[in-house]
Amino acid sequence: MQTAERLAKIPPYLFMELRKKINKAKADGVDVISLAIGDPIEATPDSIIDELCATARNPLNHRYPTDEEKGMLLYRQEIAKWYQTRYGVSLNPENEILGLIGSKEGCHHFVLARVNQGDTVLMTDPGYPAYRSSILLGGGEPYNVPILPQNNYLPVLEDIPTDIVKKATAMFLNYPNNPTGACATLEFLDKLVAFARESDIAICYDNPYSEILFQGQPRISFLMAQGAKDVGIELNSLSKPFNMCGWRIGIACGNPDVIAAISKVKENTDSGVFNPIQYAGIQALRNEAPFGEKMLAIYGQRRELVLKTLKKIGIDFNPPRGTFYLWVPVPQGMTSLEFTNRLFDKTAVVVASGTAYGKYGEGFVRISLTVPDDRLAEAMARIEKEFKQ
Ligand SMILES: Cc1ncc(COP(=O)(O)O)c(C=O)c1O
Image (cartoon, rainbow, N blue to C red):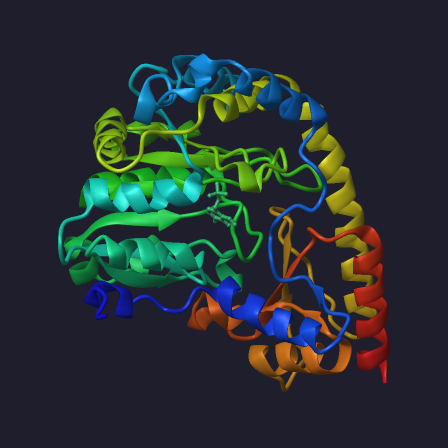
């Protein structure tokens, strides 16, 4: 049967392709270690699971979620407290916060809520691949704004061609950045707000790594910038700070008009998040900050191990301080794909080629630290052996 033409525009999802490759090698008996995917391996904290189990026993929670597409008021109030405590940002739970089925859902529904057919939507290159798919599925035209090491992986807004800026109605950004690990500064966020205001571009600031920071890097929300709520929203997620990727629970907050518009889209597409998952989310936000600290210490050690190994094989660089990824320059004379393939063929270690995130990802690979310590140690031993000769 013929399927919709819009799907033909969507490039194959990176991780689906990788998964196929990994599964095939595993079926052939190869001991594959994947450092490609950012999905924490350690369990969600017990208190969160207990809250889910307890609330799932209440038949009232088996009905459509309370407050449906907006998310429970209690959940939204907890988000408001979390934003106040962690970022010093004040939010009105009534009209400035929305519960999401993960921030990926928010990316997609943001486009449906803001972008008209044929509108240009800015996104960074390299960038999280789901932005392109969301833009295309929503009828927009993606435009890649390069983010380069010499600019600390921040876009140079004044370099975006004027005709593109005129046509653009929205922009996706994400700092701490997947894939590069770069962090934004408040100074940059001020410039971003001014740019968005002048050009009437709605910002979708995707911030699921807001808590994954190293070496004293300060926590930053887009909404800390003065006037940010006038020009856009922030997406956040419980996936990464509380090891809840599979639970599908996230946050949209900021501009009330955009929040209401996304809410309208959700009202007509899904009925929100299962109440017990929202109760579990409340438990996470209210009580599990120490778990986040524990995970940061674990990622910090893994980061050191990878950096030490890379140094031994001649890859010495100063990594940005955000996310649980390392954006690693490939050895001189190799492309990203050549390095990725050599790693896979010779060591059975899978990393993500930088080019999977856009053409400006050439020259890099992304290594994820969400693997068990012993597997990471084994991967590093194999890499050291292969590349040290
Ligand atoms: C930049 C970025 N945005 C959004 C997501 C999706 O997060 P969620 O699990 O909340 O949908 C990811 C997941 O890897 C991501 O890297």
